[in-house]
Length: 612
Image (cartoon, rainbow, N blue to C red; front, side, top):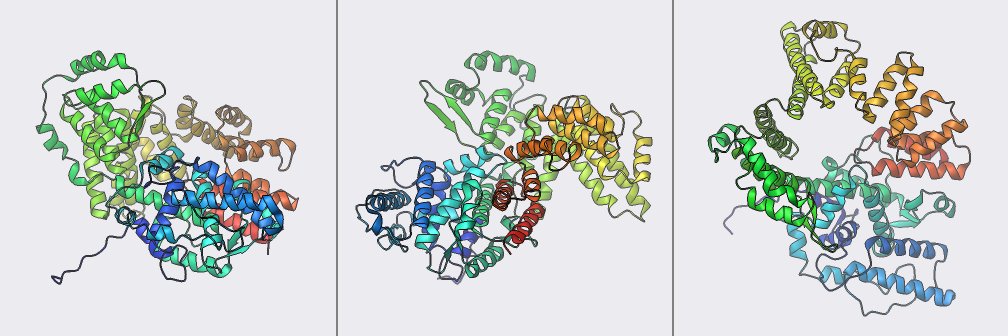
């Protein structure tokens, strides 16, 4: 030893393993290998990342078996008196276990008992070949499996499928393989009334729930919004959400773009590698790629060839890497391009380097890539923001870029304005920032990028009671394309039929006692199945509990609106249905990417009144 010590870099998965693995009282998994190999393959729909020969059924089919198995064992503890039925479920237990290993097992198990005496995860712990791979992933030296990332990206704002899988796998594992004091049976009544896919046959014991929650809060607090001060309930569903949040944090850690990889715009423009004007490149781009369709594998191959010297081909290839894309080959065969932020940044830069003037879309996209990455320090975040602003300025009169610059100016103006109550110079600096931000957002809106008008409307709503600020801004901004008025901004944006603007215009009219004018806008928003439109219509236009109110709230709940589900629960009298709605609302809140922690606390409080 040379006397030097190395600090192990903390990562989200490492923090999770510190909380839940080992010999601590909060331990749920024997070691990192067990935790990783149990959770990751099942969440990613890839049952074993380490075994090529074993091809079981899909994860969701297997989860269905787990649900049936737990329901059977819960209802019939001990199986010896059930003959063939008992044998069937014992075999199912073996099948589930074999899938957890990703290989066929030759073991024969006795009929199932409460402790699953014939089964052991010792085989998982002894598979040393997988441990180095897992260790490197947990320490962020190797990315998570491709299929897992695809599942997260395809889930968008809704984690329902992933939460569902994680919940059932954890319940199965913890009941049969964790410490004997970890889980307890729930009363039959509670099981009967829980929410659809998330029936909790077994739950944490109170002691274990408290230990696990506090261990996770200590180790994983930065990675999940589940650790709010208002949180009072911790169960398997909440644990599933924490696991998902940590995996998202791990994915974000791996996909970020190092600042060193993003060239300074001034230096990049000096390297301009082509003298072919941008319009001529567009003609070449159409000539060489136009005949290949948008999703053919041949187009991807042509992109690889021409992106080196054609700014439009480079911009398209960068976009392909930014989002990931599937190209069809023939006869239902396809080729997947894996999402890769680093390659995206590289090709956006190549596009800018090869265009005269610089391609506006690439400038904006590179700025977006910069600010959408994660950085370890406040200083790095500041550098990334300033470099992104330079690229946005390089984009010139590009509506999306103008609107993004306006976002930064609004933020900077707010920071100044909040400290300018008695400081006139600061107030005027804030005023100048707001003036520039509104001018840019207005210009973007006039160029059909209506998000600029949405942004102005949000600003006006926030400051609607501050007459001095608004009067000063209106005096300075008398020549906007759309007047500096919340209603005018929302009407312009709503003319594009965006459901967000339609809903907020309706709410504006309702606040100003013009409800009759509001209803047509909510009806227009409902045509796009916008859940919030159904909810707001029920709240503002129908008596609570009426037939129309129930119909609209039910539709909003079916469209995944937790507030609507909560309203239904609050107004439900029948205990079983009320319990079902409470649990459904809770699962909906936990399935949203941006959790509503305040609503979750209200749901937990309502649940306590049902089960004191």
